[in-house]
Amino acid sequence: MTSAIRSTIVGSLPKPTWLAEPGILYAPWRVAPEQLDEAQRDATRLCVADQLAAGLDVITDGEQRRRHYVWGFLGGVAGVDTQNLTMKPTRGQRFKSESPAARLIGEPTYVGSQAIETLQAVKALTDRPVKVTLPGPMTIVDSLSDQTGRHSDDDLAMIFAKLLNREARELAAAGAAVVQFDEPCFNIYLAQTREWGIEALKRAIDGVEAKTAVHICYGYGGSEVAAWKDTNHDWSHYEQTLPLVAQTAIDQVSIETAASTVDLGVLETLQGKDVLLGLVNVGSERIETPDEIAIGLRKALAYVPSGSLHACTDCGLVLRSRHAAFGKMRALSNAVAIVNAEIGQADS
Image 1: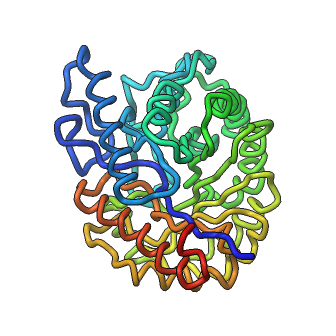
Image 2: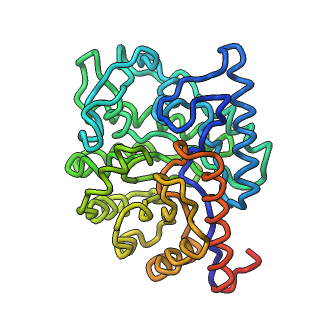
Image 3: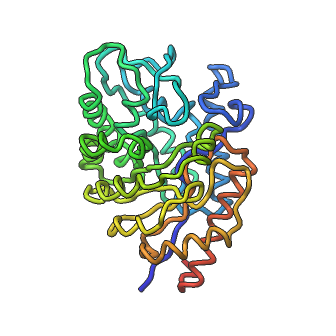
């Protein structure tokens, strides 16, 4: 018996213009510090309402409390300065020569979750499964400048894997249905992924009593990323990374296909895993039609059982307008309804 395809997003949604400047990463808050908590709560409530209205099956907090998806977790780690940033070559300089990076100024020590309160607030707004996103160990290391000079990259990744594992366990205990680790670096540093990145991911998910996911993409929808995608001709990275991920205990794997020409045949390597298939281009304001997304879902069903398939975005929608983000989410859920009807799951 077949099961229904579901819909979700990778994690982030655009912030309201009164909270942060739209369309840019690392946008500073537009709200006074004493009003920020209330403003972020309000923005989170709007994000949840939009996802529910769009018809998504798995809900996130829209990452409304984070200026950046890596810094959101690092704010709960002592020994890391996320205020006085430095510039550092990151992401293999694939998109730009340097990016802002938090600074490691002491021994990283977990001091408490930055996400549990938000998780509980989201759960109070919906009875649908809630996913919480965290940066993966390799991506944290790539986004961090070690000012102490004490650690190699692989050693530092194992340290952060332990801290992430503690956070993930606490989130699971607080009711997260899915804890997702964002690892775009798995598609950049292929040798390091093989040598120590996969091991760090294994340590991060160990003993987490919720579904675990890893998101591996080709970057946000910014202009530098879009320019690289327009000229790139090698999309074979998943052929190397996904077989490695398939050997782990991870439950779900999130990949992009909308803004790339990834061969969907690579999904054969993920048998037994849930696949969150990116069918929405986060680098464009254009809203895909449900029929366009449905084509991708039908193709994916040749490799993934319907009950293991989620229609998803390529990456986070933070850089898009709120209008486009809502339209893209609605298109995802409508496409799922189309294909579910075709496979006899219209009422699911």
